[in-house]
Image (cartoon, rainbow, N blue to C red):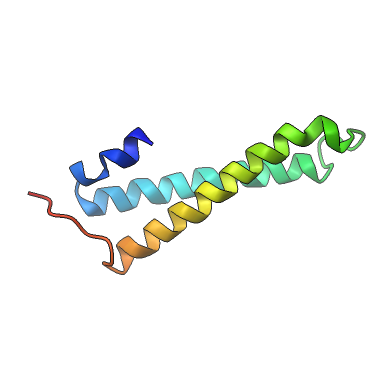
Length: 84
């Protein structure tokens, strides 16, 4: 959240690059959570043992959706700021 608070302090092109990196990181996190939750790593775990992983996946997926929206807005020039 602190990084987002100061997003306007850097040029929009740099912000876009950094947000795209965050998008890649979040996609990786979600994929990792999915691998665990779908039994690819620990097939004998009951759901209750993975409930915290479900929560972490939900948070990462929500942030990913939000970041993708901000990236789209920046690319479409719907989100801009004075870089002076």
